Image (cartoon, rainbow, N blue to C red; front, side):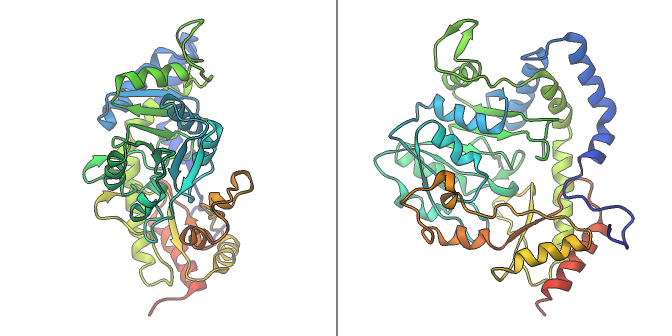
Length: 378
């Protein structure tokens, strides 16, 4: 524990958050228990309606987790063996797992040096006759350059699947992220800005035909029980998770505002630190799923992480190895050095504590220790 602080610093503090919401959460969970409708209960439909209303999109479909959401989206669009899907090399593994699980091949576009999102300037040159879709990731809580991405996709007759697992509630040019693509997906993993009490996910679309395909694929390919029209999966959102999410959705804008306020304080206290603080695209609203700094030198990140840990400050690396270099996803078209920006960024990023319960005392202390290690610009 940091000796100068009144409370221990947490990387993510769900305990304190849930303590504040406990009466409402308990009441909604008790309703599910009383109904004994634990899978596809009425509350699942209520949540889906609330989610679609929040985003301003016609249809929402709950599912078991964010990885399934991506795979179901690809299946609903008929993407499979022999097809290519363009994505980013700098994301959680689920993005590429889903592409490969349907038999398709990922093609990568290197990332922007400021936002760490897909670099739209490099997108067109990655398109081939086998390309069927583009899957941008809105990383760390900030939108990719989604209007340009969707424009390029439209020009080439490609679908866009937005991986919105980290940016639910973020905006781009005044429009909610997750409403630009033909389908968008999200994860409600507990540590997300909108998190469940376990695994959960959802898919969104304005296309009614796609809505039914997504819904049916998530339930063994059936609309009517024991009548299977598509090859499907068992990926239903359970009722207790839906009940938790329904309560927390009411507070999502408040949660995101708290994260933005914490990020403002980090920016203030780290303004003279010899690190790069998160860039905020002026076209969008960053909701800071992560507050991730960039070190100037390779090798410095790991030493800083050890130093912070010794002073009671947890941190994490999102992500230490780009996807094209991971053993499970190796592709001869992308040897080491093929995507230099992603490879360089992966060696130098460090995510600091970020959650709704951070206070100024903690942030000032974290910044003080970072500056003690890396020095100041002046």
